[in-house]
Length: 468
Image (cartoon, rainbow, N blue to C red):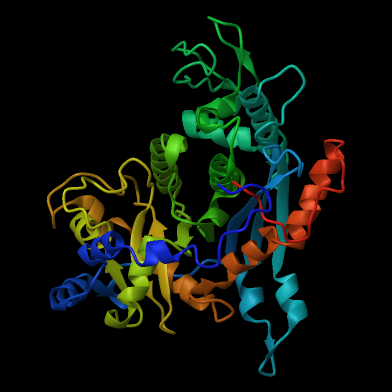
């Protein structure tokens, strides 16, 4: 690590570049290479979109997309480990008919496009390292602030407020059970590690040590909290969970108050339908909730909603782009566990991929304009999207287990945009509403933190990036 203002020599890289050990190591390694046998495997897994079964006659009449952005900033230049985290999440409603009919005399009417969409954003700030509440430790401050954030952020589109805490408890409750009556068991007390503790919609206390327990302790992000370093990882985990709980809030309220309309909706989240790290246990809860929802809607004679996660980056997106030329337009490529292990993860004995994190299954889709989409969709009416089973006879790998896939991809095909590579308009709109800009945007958020923490406001340089 350099001293402040210490610069590296212009020729400091030469010993590394000339090292025979490094040259030898680089010559030993391999990178993914596509061979003739891979082309055959890809062709065998491609299915024409028109050959898929569809569970509905019409496409969605509305789309709600969700995306988020987070930033961690250093609040004191002389004490850079003092950090504050910001999160902004957007939900964008697009009325399909109005949006697709916004063209007048060959040109798009920007006013009609604007009227066809409704945007809502939620913002929050969380304490990172070396920022605490009075008389509290850093992790205690994180826990209470996270709870108050999830309790305060709520939607009111259906009448009474429905908070992110309500959505979290909905995953742990039984069908029809009020959220206030749900008392899920916490794995262990964050303070004394006592087991058997339960949490509810309001804070409770541990029966062993008396410390406060919050429903957001179910997310277990406090286990990764760092007193002395960056907390950008758990900040991103909170953002991802909040995006998915926000989508659940709308789905659950549509099911309660407008179940007929629910079947006409498409819900899009940024990233795969999955929970990672300490939040991964929510995956099992989400699969169970989705199964209960599909069963109830079928009993009532209503269609299930379209739900999809779209990835913008990562190894699966890289792989999809590498093989794009071998997939015909408007074809879906299925991904078996064997293909994922051998061709993407390159670990033939890696076990069952995604069984602990994913509540949707990945597919590659090449659109009518040769764009590549990496999507995840849930099984319908229920079931794990990834589970052990024989190759070629595993129900979770059968494309018929995903009857909403065709309608979902047809809708996404209609919403393509060339503004960005492999993009769809609803998700681009959500990102536009949620994004926190770097550069000047970071500087403004830093000044906001300094003012709120009553720190000197002369410790900022425009465009300055944090030092980790």
